[in-house]
Amino acid sequence: DGGITQSPKYLFRKEGQNVTLSCEQNLNHDAMYWYRQDPGQGLRLIYYSQIVNDFQKGDIAEGYSVSREKKESFPLTVTSAQKNPTAFYLCASSMYSRGTGELFFGEGSRLTVL
Amino acid sequence: KQEVTQIPAALSVPEGENLVLNCSFTDSAIYNLQWFRQDPGKGLTSLLLIQSSQREQTSGRLNASLDKSSGRSTLYIAASQPGDSATYLCAVGDDKIIFGKGTRLHILP
Image (cartoon, rainbow over all chains, first blue to last red; front, side, top):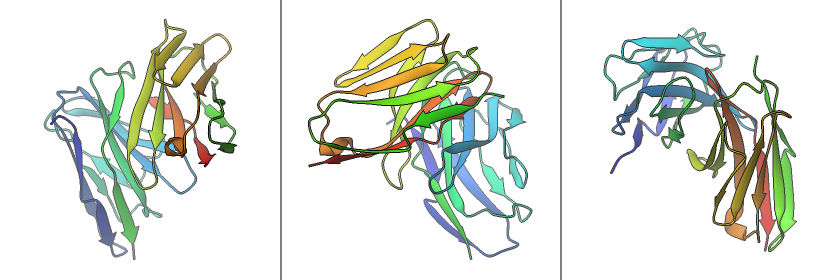
């Protein structure tokens, strides 16, 4: 089945450690996005990529890094520089870039810093 | 900078009622507007996508309208059911895709 797969679903991290969240899509979509969601909040954009080997910062990119070496993959690294990393992370993709296409989401990854 | 606002933040209605959720945005130069549903601890499910050239979209008991000139969209849910209880979010697409904070809907059996 076509879709977006995020892993792991739950992740625990000690302070000072970097962690990488995986996002894979088999929809042949050009654009991919990472969002962060905190309790009672909407989604805030971390990074987005409209084409392979290119990505742009969103509204809250500090303390995060991404890569887009393959069309189907857009991993997010939460670095130790991110001061409050505990959150629900959502990956999404869209067939067309520049916000013109319908957005589809994975099931999310919940990161807890101990 | 695009800002998206959803009112009300929370809503409880008895089963069977029709209801309207509101979404407003500050910059009318958008490509589209999308409504999503989110169940607790889950990802988002797309409900309706309205392109900027369209005025409304319908899917089953759901109808979404778009008025670009006034920066507003509404999601109409007919004959509400307990299974409609969820958080509903709208998002506007321009160079980025920006979300509102959502409306938490609770349908009372």
